[in-house]
Amino acid sequence: MKQRYTALLLIPLFVPFGQAQTPFEYADQRTAYVHYDDVIPFGTGGWLTWGGACDDSGVNCGNAVVRYDGAGTLLSIVGVPVGSWSDLATMPDGGVLICGSSPMCDVIVNTSAAVRLDATGSILWTREFVLADLRHCAVATSGTIAMATEDTVLITTADGDSLRAWPSNTGTIAEMHWLNDSSLLVAGASAIAIIDPMGTTILSIANTQEIRDVTVVNDEVLLLLPGMIQSRSDQLLPIDSIDLSAWTSDAKGFTGDGTTNLVRSSTGMIQFELDQGVLNNFDFDAPEGYQVLGAAVQGATISTCGVGTYLGRTSGVVRTHLFDGASAEHDNNVGIFIASVDSTWTNSPWTNVYAFHQLCHVGVVNHGTTPVSELMIEYFGTSWICGPAGVVMDLTGLQLAPGDTAVFPFPELLTTYFTIPQNDSVEVEFCLVALSPDNIFDRDLSDNETCSVVQFVNTVGMDEEEMGAIRVGPNPISDRIDITFASPLRGALNAQLFDPTGRQLAEVAVPAGSSTFSWPVLVGQGGVYVLTLSGQDLFRSLKLVASDR
Image 1 (cartoon, rainbow, N blue to C red):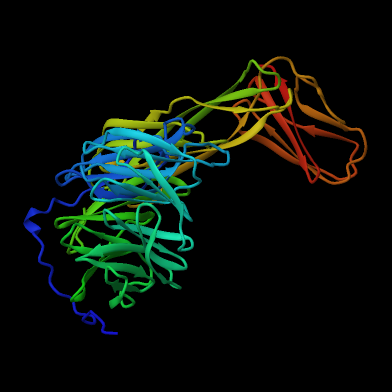
Image 2 (cartoon, rainbow, N blue to C red; image 1 turned 90 degrees about the vertical axis):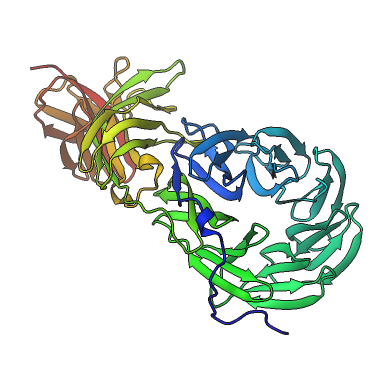
């Protein structure tokens, strides 16, 4: 077969550089738990991204579409009632169709949903369908919508009203594309077919290759395969192919604006033409920790979106690039530390349920060469059923000059533990992470996290001295702790004593075989101390009281 490419020939790009916007970067700091799955041109010079997020509590998770103008200014955020994203398609009126699963939490999802946005990004309608896991959507020029699960196609009107659903005969559906208002191309694992909206197969050919994306350029059907673009006629007859193996083996999908044709990989872009093959390519030059999940082109500018991640902490990122690979230059770099921490217990209306409150001050250092005026600090602690629990603090108006340090009180942190025995305490690690200085992804994440281990002391009510088969006294303590075991220890124990601030005061090993153990200690300030005993088969914790001296 004739190959339509010129091997390793890089042809200058004839694009209107003078019309390109200055490259920008925006790291979304409205919430700590956000990622962008894809991006499309939206409006004149602007961009629309979509992905998943939670609110500032970290518990109420959902999805949103976020609009930016060509300079990177955030224009709007619209929450969208779709549980998980699958695909996005543009509507003839300039709006957007999004499809995916219904919003569920920690349950089996057995329905799907679609949302249509108008050209301003506002929601026009939402629909729910009794189909599991919509994965693909495509829109004809007439506005007719096709959505698909892995083996079923659903046809609706532009208003989302169902017309017909039919099983696909192509195997697991990989991608769909309307050829015209009466012909839908369905590419599957076992066949590629052209099917009319009523489900009648017009023609079909066998397929044994992995199809990663489908598009139509100049009336030719383009199939993106591993390492290759395959060109076919609108009757699915083979025409040519373009070899991509010299540039990437990890092609993700097609993108373009009608005049520029691009293939996105996980690390960069490849520009091609059907009659010339590969014209150019460039690397995304992504900062460390930034994973590109989506990309689009508009004029002389390419936008990428994805997630900036550090130890599971995330920040949605949008960046734009020029065709010569230029992107926004930054050296934004902050560090973070815990300056002080205190904690208290409170009772709850439920039996054996206690909550602890953390009060801390956090310090921030500007290691970069430009002042920082805005920053997000995220608390990460206990996990909840529908997402991570936490608190996000947006710091604005900082005026933090290069080299400066500032300390801020962090909002009170509350975590609830269930069915903790009356006499127990708990040792908890919590972490704070600094993200997105001035809406930029931090270029050095090595010092963006700080953690502290705190011994939370339950000061609610009076405590018994008995701990199952272990008895400790005297209480209040003075100069020693006497421990009595109901039977000789089968193995050694480690004893630790924590002072009222939660800091370790002393530690000693209790030998195996002991029936009693006397531990000389020197306590200082009055308050509630915590004794922990831990071994291979045991962990016990008891509060001991000391009076002021």
